[in-house]
Length: 348
Image 1: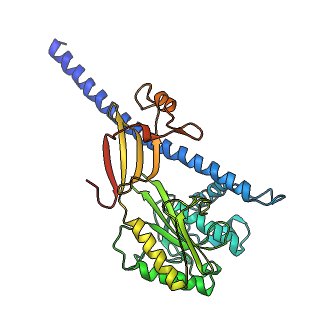
Image 2: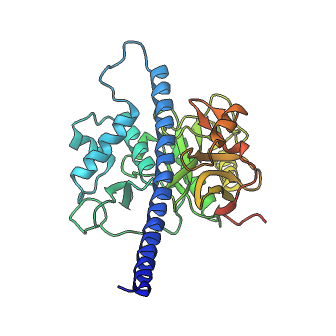
Image 3: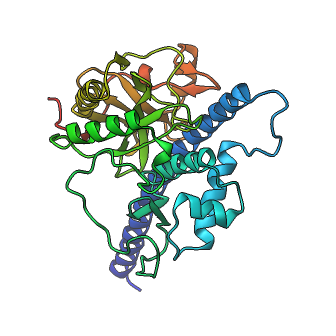
C-alpha cells in the first residue's frame, strides 16, 4: 500500500468517525432534552405527592395510590391493550376500580393530561388509545375515524356523563365554547371537566412545545356557583395556586357574563407569543428557557451541567442562581445564543 492509498484510507475512516460523532451528538442532545423533561416531571410529581398528603384527611384510605402510580397504572393498562379504545369508565371497569362519578372524573382529568404529552391519542370524543402502536380500525363503541370539529375549543370530553354538571355549569360551558368559536389564535390542547377534588367546573388550556413534547404551562378557570377564578394551574391536580399569579382573573355574574370574561382572558393569553432561549457549548444546547416573548414571564427551563462550560454551574450556584433541590436557574446565563419561536409570531 502506497502513501496515497494509506492517506485515502485514513480520510475515509476520519469521515466515518466524524459522521458517527455527529450522530452521537444528536443523540446526546435528544437525551439531554428528555432527561431535563424527566427531571422536571419528577419535581412535579414530588409536589403532587406533597399536595395530596397535605389534603388527605387523617386516617384516610391507605390504599389510595399516589398520583404518579395512578398515571403509570393508566399507561400500563393501555400498553396491555394497544388495539383497544377506552372511555374513562371502561378503563375503570377493566382495572376493577370504583366507577363512581367522582373517581371517573379524576381519571378523565388524567387522560386529558396524558394526551398532549404524547402517550395517548383521541380517536373520538371521550375515547382514548395508546399511540405507540399502529392505529387500526376496530369494532368499538367509540368512533373509528378521526373527526375534525369546526370548533375545537372547550368541548365536554364525555357528553354521555357530562361530569354531573348542573344547569348553570352547562350553560357556562356552552357559552364559553360559543365565544371561542370565533378565535383566530393557534390551537392548544383544551377540555372541560373537573379538577381532582371534583369541587368545581374546570375549563383547561395547556400550552406546550409540541416538537419537543414539553409541557410549558397549564392555565384554566374554576367555576363555582356564580363565581369564576382563573390562573396558572397545578399541572397534575389542576388546582389554582394559593397565592394568585400575575395571570390571575376573577369575576362574578351570570353564566353568560362569566363565559365572556373567561373567553377574553383565555384569548389574551393564547395570543401571547412564546419563545425558547437556548445556550450552546461545543455545538450542543446545554440550557433552555421558555417565556412569553412580550412580557418576559418565564414558563419552563432546563440546565444540563454535563454539557455546560466547565466551572459554570459552580459559579451560578455561588451567585445564587439556584432554586429548591439544587435546580440551577438560567437567569444567570446572560444573552442566549439563539431564540426560537415556539408559538405565535416572533418578536424582533
